[in-house]
Length: 198
Image 1 (cartoon, one colour):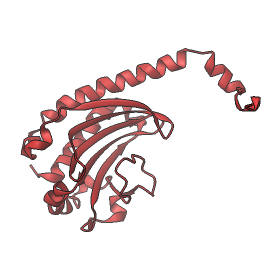
Image 2 (image 1 turned 180 degrees about the vertical axis):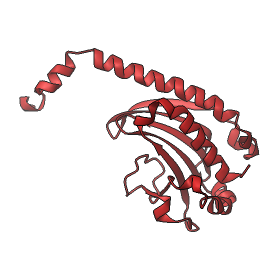
Image 3 (image 1 turned 90 degrees about the vertical axis):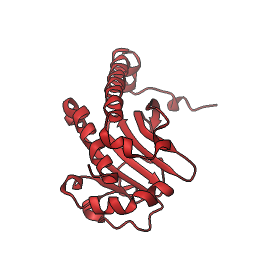
Image 4 (image 1 turned 135 degrees about the vertical axis):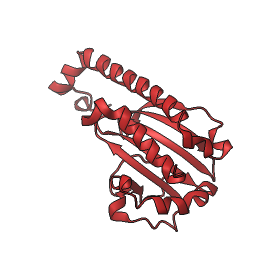
């Protein structure tokens, strides 16, 4: 039989379980993120450099999805462009992680990494990438920015000739919420410029 202490509620937990307002507020916030990501998907699709990508990487339309348990917390993500294959990946993922941040990540693997590796290495020295991050892990589906997964590019450098998986990311604080849509769109542009300088 379960120990009754394991299912007992603390005073704070009891306050929350009897108050529907906080969960309804959470649902409204998630809804607003969906609206923001919907607008961003339209802006991303209209980006001039997008048409220079390999045609197969643009076949799938933008996808917005949500979940309740990335490290125990709700999240929303927008994938576009999104070409996820077993061996070859070219994708940009915009991510909202409750209690943490917005992020946007360019993810490359296989033939797409080989196609764009040289141009990315040349572009990363530009000032617009001073606040960018690069993966130090080979784990494709980790989205946190702790030092076992990501490192600031200014500390890492621009030589990633041995990488089999490349993730370049920008992170934006919720303190910038009112400007988040513009910041994410600008970050999308920076990521696209890594592939093709306009």
